Every structure is written in C-alpha cells, then in structure tokens.
Length: 234
Image 1: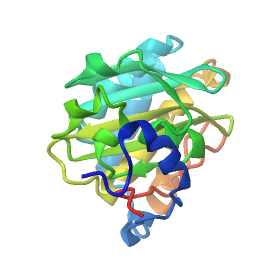
Image 2 (image 1 turned 180 degrees about the vertical axis):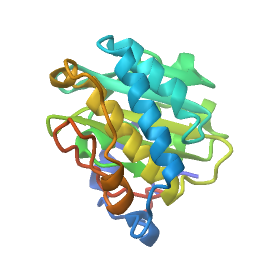
Image 3 (image 1 turned 30 degrees about the vertical axis):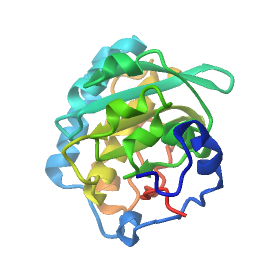
C-alpha cells in the first residue's frame, strides 16, 4: 500500500506537505506514561557504557546499538550522522539488509528519516519501505513498522536513529518513550563539549516524574519532542 503517496522517489515532496499531526494517535503524546525503575536503571547502565567508549565516536555508536536491543526491539537499525552541510550519511547499520543501508546518503526530506532530520521531530509507525529509494524499498516490503528519532546537538539535528521491525505491528508509546530517552543519552555521549566529563549520569527523578524526560545531569537540556505517529495518510 502507498497510503496516498506516489512512488518512493516522490516521497520527500509528499512528506514535506504532511502536517506533523497527520494521523497522530491520541496516545502518542505519551501523557501519563512514565519510565519504570528497571528502565531507568537500564538507561543508567547504557550511559556508563557510552562513557567508557569515549572519545571514539564509532565506538560510542557501536556500543549504543549493541545495547539498544535490550531496551527496544528491532530487526534492522541505522544511525545517520551529519556528513556535509545539508547531507547525512548512514555511519552504522545492523540487522537484516544492513549492507543496503551502510554509507547511504540522506538529505532533508528523503524518506521518513529525512523528514525527521528536516523537522527535528520523531516519526513513528510509518511503512518502512517508504524510507528507501525504489531500488531498495522492495527489500523492506515485509517490514511492518519503524521508529525514527532525531539525534539533536546544540539544538540542531546532528543525525537520526531509525529502527525497522518485521515483527512489531507498531512501536508503542512505551517503546517511544524509552527510545527517546535512550537517544538523549546517545546525543550527550556524542557531544564534544561533554567528553571531558568524568561520568554521564541519568537524572532518575526527572525521567521518572516528568512527562518529558529531560535529560542527563551534566548536560545541557536536550529536548525530547512528543513522538509523531502516522501512516503518512492524507
């Protein structure tokens, strides 16, 4: 199904015209959803692992992705980082079809991930094949859903994390909340200004008691936007 969108090569133009709230599920605002103590402990452990991986950016990302499947399920995963002005590159990919994603160049509004980069907003539960050009999209036809989150640094989109699943029918609000918090930890670990800090720590109180988990004790506030959930319908 195309969900009202023309062939994949025209996705960026169509996606640009879709209002962020199109198809927005009421629950996707995440109201009343809090991270459990177990999840907070998992995030704390993740932050410590990333701290030990500093200052090697590649090692930080590899460590993050290796630990991520213990937090949120996925079958394929891609980490995109800024390469040149206005262009991003998949610097790390794992799972099925990872070889098709590695090194891929992405511009603003290229597929779902490009939309996330352009708008600095999460986008969840779209068809994964819509995130790829026509020559790659068929390989993801059996996939059911995705979750894409911006990696924000200094209030700018430094990159994005996109998960693809062939087993989940959707990424739930709980998945989205936990993934959003994990991306905050990753963004902090990748921040050059924080590499001299002794240790990255999770503010358990903020994450547990606030509807919008903000952050890491020794970092600037990194905003976690409310996840957008859509099938890119018109």
